[in-house]
Length: 140
Image 1 (cartoon, rainbow, N blue to C red):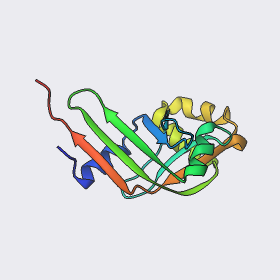
Image 2 (tube, rainbow, N blue to C red):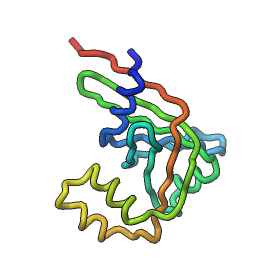
Image 3 (cartoon, helix red, strand yellow):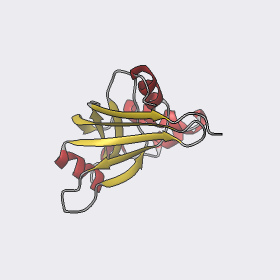
Image 4 (tube, rainbow, N blue to C red):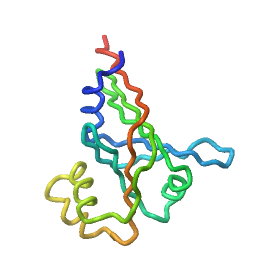
């Protein structure tokens, strides 16, 4: 059963680990990697990565990417979004703190942020254009 707009946006706003996919353009399947991300309903999807990474280079070339988040315990639910990159640039302290705060315990965020090299990180923002979603209902 597809999710409503409000349900899919609320689910994407939860701190899931996303599978990010981007076209490689070299006759191979897309690159798919796990990422931390941030999303506020109605807004853009944001994630950060090393600016010299293969992922960053492929996204810069493709100018779009997809993300999938899922819950595997009952009820199985997923949301997939795909869209264009609307901004890419150096990661700010605010970007790094906001995203890491979604995934780390509060007492670990400051140490993680201080131990990160902001000079190598790049933040990408994507505007969701295409959505797929489902909740397969309670099992058993």
